[in-house]
Length: 387
Image (tube, rainbow, N blue to C red):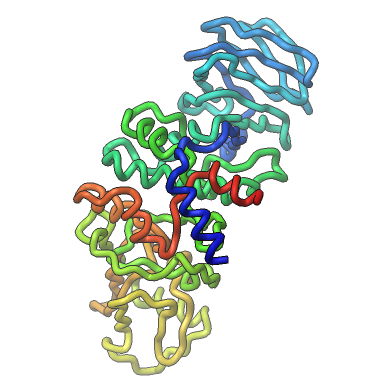
């Protein structure tokens, strides 16, 4: 086994990292909005519509197409002229680069632009809208949605590799709904195509096909969050599942950032009620110091008067920014002094941005937050997996 691993990484060193073979991914977009009608228009490229695999309609440049739900089918109109009713529609781009815009009419939403094509079909009285998009175009869109447009090139490289790894690891998450991933934070935020920063497109091209694997050459669960507050969580602290590469890391890079600290005030009566509802026994006489809970380093459980509960449950119930907080009593209020933003597992985005700004490259950033991992080419991994 050791010899095989040495051989693999020796060969990987010489392989041109030219990325994954061309691959499409189906992304459910606007899934939270129950779309009944929308307008499709072309921004670049050439398109054709195929309805029920039998009817093909060429879309002229600058055409505006209306799609609306009708009973169990979707009606297509061109400038108010009826084209047809279909149960399954594919809008396919025919040029090298194809860009389109969709504007939801019912409900009324802001217009969004995407690359490549669409798949449409009725779903529970609404239109299921799926962006059938090249994987690398999708990666660019996620990087822009998750990381914004004001970061460094090296950070965008980092985010692109993480995003690609996460997408491929969870490729079948929504398969029973007719697509691979959704565009919401349940999977990865994907608001539109990348169009604001050239650095994002450049970073995605530079890292094309690169993914992160563990020591068994399996894709890692590339989780990330906004800010660790100075220390990340091991995976078992949050999800009760141990991952060899998701370990606690002391993260000074995340300190002094916008999301590194927070405070919340909770009325004492409300906190007492909450504890009682969760099985805690509140003594008749309680001193102020008894309400103190100190968390200099990340813990898994909150403790009071000999009882305990998962910190992640408190975070969810009170909608806290993180589980990394300490408590003290001030008057009739419990003060929560917190650190970080998010679940705390894996890469801290603000910490990684700071690392990139201070000269660390994407490989060092990734290996700082994920332990005992390798950054490899998807093409090379597929080759050796077949051996």
